[in-house]
Length: 207
Image (tube, rainbow, N blue to C red; front, side, top):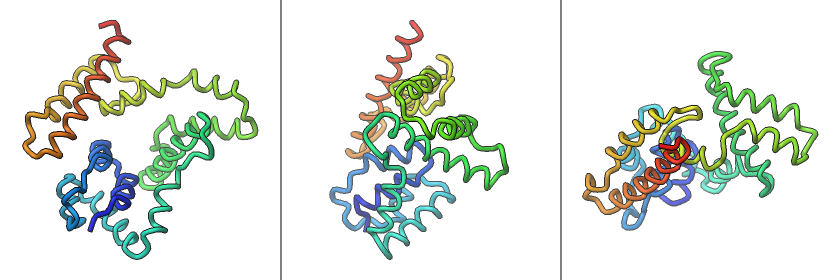
């Protein structure tokens, strides 16, 4: 049986951004008897992700509350301040970079996460707003980052990259392609976000 709590756990461990979005919008109404294997097949998970999901599901069955706490609060910000939220967000990716290096060798983790770690170490004794402002100037805005994630792109993408990704994703998530109401509603939501993101970058690039 799949619960909302279990969906949040799966969302926390999923690496594919499309899978994360699907889980975040997954509607359990009328699916009380849905099993984990059916869910994984519906999501189109890779064999590697299926292994991770099965392990999380097994741990959840043994101790739901403890497993939920482990995933839900691991990267919870210490406060509502912008710095603490930013710090918690990047810590998550820092951990992923470490895991990548452990698997593939030193230096293979994302360079930006290494730089952020250096920044955090250098400024661990200071909580002044000026130090945060100086660092913020070196990064893209939260809004732009959000739109890039919607378009499944990384910082530094050109407008040609943005345009190509927008067209490909709109083709993939066009609501008319789906008959199932839940999937159609999800596709409409994604299409709306894609349009908003594309308009943002059109305005930014004066296109």
